[in-house]
Length: 304
Length: 304
Image (cartoon, rainbow over all chains, first blue to last red; front, side, top):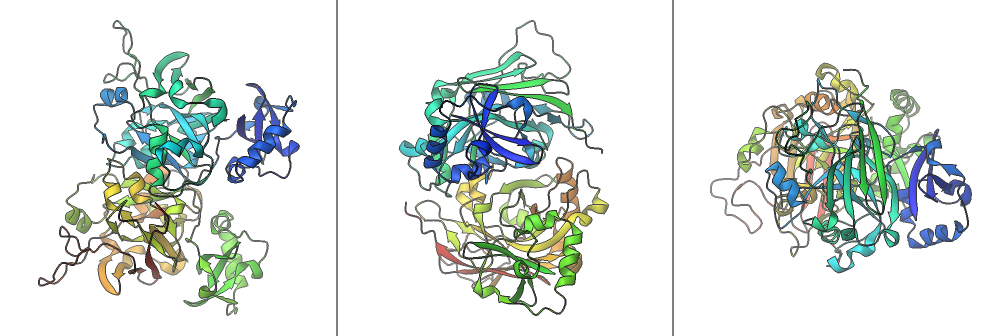
């Protein structure tokens, strides 16, 4: 199943996709269910099973272009994000990280939008470098503490795509990333949660990032230094994972440009394959077999 | 006014303290108000004014020992915490931090409990060093972006005490603090929100931490390197602060012990004034003029 979180006027809802455009509104089909995907996951597998049975033969009553898509989980209890989880990205940044423990920071809800919603490029008077980071998002399905690596995937509800958009100079203001990973509408999360049974083994998929149609990142998820299972185990040593918690698995490095490529103003001389985002760009993050998360970049409209 | 968040059975509520023990249940007094303090703050100053008028002459209908106190804001949209915001703490740790920008990380709700609720000391098989950090908490009252330093305090609803409990070896696992600042029930936030009009200027107050009645930290809040106003301004350059957002202002250093003091097993040889927390301890964080946040430390009861 592919589940979306959407908004129609002031009304929040959950939908089940029937293809890449049409969906079934759960509000209409099963009115007693929660309208927030986090609280639906709270009800456990029986509810997902109930939905799977109720949608059989249903061809959908709405289209995603009729609504506003929210982040897959609009307000998770926690969003954990990994830094430097691909050797290719470690090499291009020249940074170091522990080989023994994942490097983890957090994002807050207002920093993330849904599929097809505009991302805000910071006002250049405030910050000049705004980068995409295409990543796999893991959504937790049931509470768990002290979860062994071998059983970790039992706690996953599903997967999605994440653009872990980053404001580089704020990220470098001090030792903790803090605000640099949390600018308003700097990241995106969608288009949908694909349930774990349908997605299968994360290592069999790739993450691909395109800017204005040009491939910028394309890497197999078997290249992650810490696997989904290992990170779930690690986090669960410290707290009881909550349904709807999100783990964002880190971004691979940039693809190299041809040798004769001439740097454009927004290109990074340090990582020639990397291009910063600017207003007017369209950034896509694809997880193969899952779908494509697409966002237009616009200038932050707030007045200084 | 002093506002608490509490739970009685499955019921969530907000109370107004009439002294340090008795409170008025808003659920009974004004039933149409939200029962979550974050959503009450969302309604703006007019609602606080309405409450102030409604409680005149009311002597309280409940006592805090009849209920379970939640963190002042049970599930904030974001909790920002400052590292190394007192010179005394920088000196004792030997760490460095930018003089130009605050060092900021995040905490998630499950890592924090309310006043009088037990904190969980990690199982020693998982982590051995569990430290108190007494701090001032700032609670945002209304949305704001690009807030000038001079106007920053207008966006504060009130203040509280925070024990920013930290699991040191996890904090040191990698460059970002991540899980080390987010163990389950490792921190506390309370006892209440004191409104800004009643609290006055943060710089006129002190933060004091006691372990089993012995003073461990005692410092004036005018020693903060980045002030409340500066941190609000800084965060608002990146996003629209949300009502109920929490900013935890960093911890001062430890008081020095007498020269003839003999180190106990849980004392830190590096910072002789600092003592780690262990099951059976009681830790108090006082912000002068506001109140005392007290928590018993118990062993994490979850099975490995």
